[in-house]
Image (cartoon, rainbow, N blue to C red; front, side, top):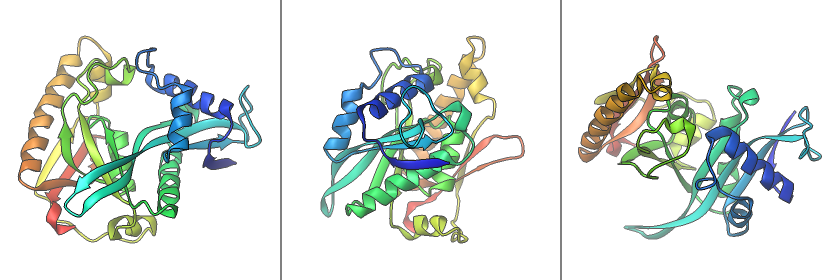
Length: 260
């Protein structure tokens, strides 16, 4: 049994810190400490955990041990309509033993539910455009869109997932109560969108990033795709879809943002 709820006790926050290190392999310069998790929750952000009653580790509480979490921060930005409060989802992690079960999506939907309950209708987060699984979750399963590419957004990172490459990121925009998102949540067929551009991420990209002998191949893909995204976004296109082909390659599908 998996229980999804806001983290409460201090040891649950500490469990989030440990899972963060386990997932990204951060060193002490990059790791977010327990007090920041606590602060985020106290000032209007979120620290939502997934607890498995079948996992009874040292930090296990009444709902079992922590097997995933989503952490977000309160944010505000200027829009033509004025200042807009929103949630910036900064971290999402799931234990290796519990991946590929839809747990990441459940954590995101819980974030949405909690935000809407407070009248917050928009959420954003950044993600590595070379991470195929993350892109599939963000765009295909949640209905987020992307129309901004941030080059080397975090600077040098100690994360082993980064593979020493620049920390390029796409900005995911999630309009929480939009027809697009409501349609996905209700599992209804989505309205067809006109796509004008497709950007491919090779299925082998993670292996290329992980080894010195092939890292240059991954970097070449990153640079080429960076240029394709930037050109497409400058023309008013946005990432509206994501799929995987028969070989496992990731395919970003871009169409005019105006059709949403």
